[in-house]
Image 1 (cartoon, one colour):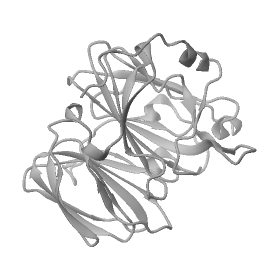
Image 2 (image 1 turned 45 degrees about the vertical axis):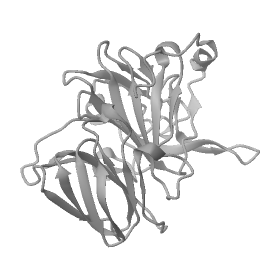
Image 3 (image 1 turned 180 degrees about the vertical axis):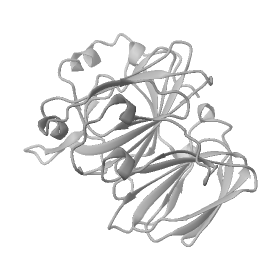
Length: 299
């Protein structure tokens, strides 16, 4: 990580702010604003017929439709129809992966919003599009810790660093629980990766506009930030279109009763992996589930 930073709750919660010079930008996270090394995330909107162009430079990049439909033309290929879901609660998203040194243009065939994220790389991989029917989905947890997982860009994908996951948490349920962390790179004696050192963004949407969640971010004595004298222990309240930064530490979530919580996870770091470790005080919960929430899967 870059220079250790004392993170406060205000620094870990990023919500939309007007950008007069870029009115279609809803939200942005950069390595400079987050105090880390890898992840940039933008959430953007386009009206039908509007365009946005960009170049990946020395980064690998992924685009996820949140709503709307898009045609993407690039120096590495063309994809005339990406998206189509009216909102994130209607099904899994498309994800288009583009390698470094790619120029591209996004045009809205139907008005909507999309997320675009990139991280630096020194590797070259082929571009590819994953459609919703190709996205593995599963139900994780149990009881009031049940949630649905869409693995948009899972570990093992033919990329360098990026991992993308969509998570749906029913009304009042907990998620990312038991609390887990991924802030130290640990390889076991058998060569298996026990934990990766990953930055993470949670980008939130709710099925009703006034919905919200609570998320706690806290470090323990093994965290590099903790050891540098910069421990984190913060609770934040993300609303629609807000993002929560997880530079280090455990990060459980609970959604408000009456509202289905969606978040897009973007992760990158020491490995293209989700290797993590639970807070040992709470991992016992996983062994005591009586069943799974019957509201899942959502679709």
